[in-house]
Image (spheres, rainbow, N blue to C red):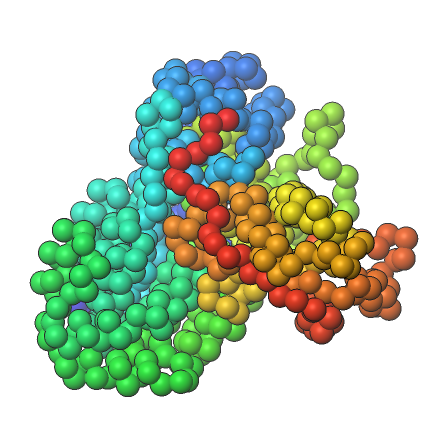
Length: 599
Ligand code: AMP
């Protein structure tokens, strides 16, 4: 398509007219951030004025920030649980939102071991769609020619459930891929996927991955970008190729389809795509049977310009492995979003992972920021903290994100800590620092210190009959194995060495720990295969004392020293690993089923 020479944007020359409009939208929003935020709050408060929740705070029709901030409290998910439970149970009255709750989005954050349920309304889908529609126009500024080929994206849906009142509960991406907006999206040459909808929407993770990989291999020369939502998902696809390339090569050589693909509409769709191609099959066999998989992505998909995966936050642990398989291809982090609300995008998607900043789009929700000082006392209801508006955050400072959404969350603590890196026009840009209270994470699982402690206690029950106890422990998210897995270091006190716990008993302890983990962890282990079996490494007696000596030698205070409950500093890992006396793995998968435990 000839590019109109009139098209321009301060962000760069747009690739086409559609992109010019998207970039103009970004300009408009980011230039008038405070005004947009004022309007968003006004819209939310007028729309939801008659809800039961807002009614409690007697805003009396006020929609201004001062009244809102002085009367409505900052809350956590646990504070809203009674309201959310009533909606889940089928109460159709306007509790949080004047618009009917269309479904619940199940967050990867958990409460009492179960995924949090985030209420959403129909119109939110359009807001999410709008944010997605901005991503390619920005990418096209940096990577030309993306309309000349396809994107190999490994996208998956997950299990859905119904609440007692009959509302669907599913992850936000499962909701999005099942939406008409996604399924019947108009053809856009800049956004063509190798995976057909049938493959993305197949709920069986093996069949979905197999057919997406098969299509990616068949169209290898056309692939210009390879991605998944999170880094862990792309690595899982590489692992899948390692395990299944022989069958994939066979299908390609013969033009047949693996009999394990049993979903009728998927089988029908893919059978039309596979044609015998012995030459391609030979190429795949040659590449995949080689010992060395370094740069495999660039070898199999030679025209790939970048890997589109989130590698910020907990996903940063996968950067070295992705660089290895990706042969140094740039890693692009495009957006920052959650089940509660989508927030923003990266206006420089080709920047290095350590320099990625997200620009919060002011039309998505009303944002507030709680200054985050790790040494400050906990939030108290008696002296409410001063929350800062989006336009007023200061460069360099860290904040906890608090949002008010169209779907009815008011002054809700998302749990993310962000740091202001700068501004685009008058809109701040944020580096994702971390999620509060997360100790271990491999995929979308998030395990906190209390959950780990509880899991250790439950597993220790198996040690009692051997007069043995866990005296110290720490943990580590091992991202080098694919899938990654939790490693727990145990120092044991064995009171009766004649009757110490056997290898099998310690294996059982691994499983007991997994059974205690939250449902997102167990789903990763059982349904998604995104987390490997938990490992316990028993270390020699005295190891944790050595750890303390090491910390003190580096300046820790003896009085205040506590064993870290999670480690990732290389010298400490080396010390721990050099003291390991035995290694144990979970012998089976823990229990998981899509149904929620009733609360
Ligand atoms: P969920 O609760 O499953 O919707 O997950 C949303 C959470 O994932 C966010 O609150 C963040 O903690 C994390 N997240 C989402 N996008 C990013 C990103 N681009 N970089 C780092 N963490 C992210």
